[in-house]
Every structure is written in C-alpha cells, then in structure tokens.
Image (cartoon, rainbow, N blue to C red; front, side):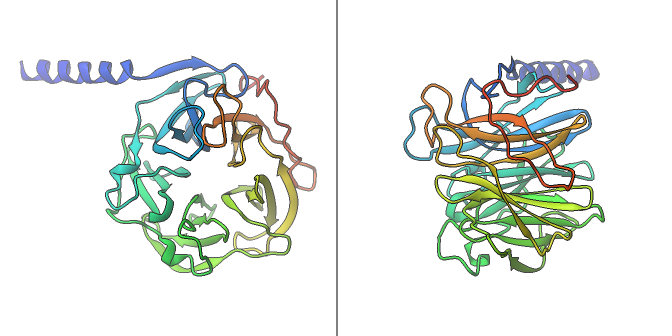
Length: 316
C-alpha cells in the first residue's frame, strides 16, 4: 500500500509539473513571443538546446524590471517548451532581487547558473537538472564590485560568462565598463587565483561578454558602445593576447542594449540575441531571437544578418 501511495504521489507531482510546461512552435523572430525575454544564454546538453533568459516584466517598460529567469528547451529549433520558473532573483537572500544577465554550464552532472543581480554582485545557483529548480550554492555572492578593481560603477559586477576549456579548467569573464576574468576551481563555486582585466587595442567594452571556443581559437564577443553593437576579438590562448576583429552584430531593432550567445548545435552555428520587435517592445521589454552565424576560412566570424524569418529547423 505504501508503494502505491508513493507511486501515486510521484505521478501527481509529475503531472502537475507537466501541466505547467508551455509548448509552442517558433514562427521566425522573435523566438519567444508569449512573454518578454532578454539576455539569452545557451547550453547544449545531450540532444537538447537550452536557452536561459531573464524575463522583462511586461511590455512598454521604460526602466529595467526583471525579477526572475526563464528556461526554454528545443531539440529542433522549431518546437519549444518552457518549464516553470526555475529561479528568482530574490532567492539569493543577499541580493537586490534584480535579475540581470546569466549563463548556465554543466559539469559532472550538475548545472551551475551564474547570475548577476545589479549592484549586489554575481551569484551561483545549482541544480541536478537543466530545467531546475535551482538553489543558491553559496549563500553569498561569488563576486562583488570589490573584485572589480578598475571600475567606478556600482553595477560593474554583472554579466558572467563561463567556459570549461578542453583541459578541464573553468574560466569566468564578466563586467560593465571594464572586463574581468578569473579561473574557477573545479567545484565551480570558488575563484582560484587572481582576478585580471581584459585589455587590448580597439577594445571598447560596455558589457555582455560571451566566451566561446572553436577549434584552437578563442572568441570573446561583447556589447560595445551605446546603443550597443556586438564586437569581438580572437586569441590563441584564453588569457590573450586578444586581437580585435570588428563588429559582429549591429544595433538590434528597438533596443538600445544587445546581448548575445553563440552556440553550435547539430552541425551549425547560431547567434542568439534580443531586440524590441514584439508589440510593446522597448529597450526594457525585449525578445529573444536567433539567426545563423558563419565563419570565414581564416576563423574570423562574418557579420550576423538579423532577420525576421529566423532559422530553419535543425538539420534542414
């Protein structure tokens, strides 16, 4: 009888979770149309592409108001599902409760969500599943403005991006106005060694760093100027020297901010970003989009063409 009760309880719990999953078919850009979303970050885990994003509060917003992060999943870039809200900013009891940009990475079967919370710093949440729920892994920030030694802004400690290199070493980059980087310990919740600053000729950095690797080349893309365009640099080593390569993505329509994720999935490269294209869209009521990313023979990236059509289903 007890086993039956446990089974029934598990069944009803699973049914309740499924009932909260929202499914839709993408119709070009924006990819997400049932709510306003910003600052996309991507993760490929097994056969699924996951998109993590902040949720802009509502349409026609003139000031940033984000309280939580969202998680979306697809196996074909056409059919999507949204899981129940996996993480709220106020779950970090030390934070301002404001949900800025973030990124999730997987290591050893655990999923680590690096989030920024405006002026209160960068935190880490952890889960056993990409869809969550997540919980604060530290009970305190991983990084604060005190770690941003070259910055004057109180919101300098935002926009984390993480890469686990081929040798197993994890790196975190972040910043607003100035860009910083450091090693992460294998446990993914502690900084190892000193914090350093990124600098190179032609580097005009606003925010939104994204670090990725293709072959033996490292790529650092970032929002540059204001209104923001996405620029990028390349290096043979993750610590540089970095060489500026130019603009990757122009101003996104009806949005003064720009925030990108670059992801390979099922043999193609994609560029995720946000704009203000939905009805009621503004610089603070944004929407996640996806377009193709192409490389030249020398490893440089071609400028991204933003489209209303978006991308075809994966594999087509």
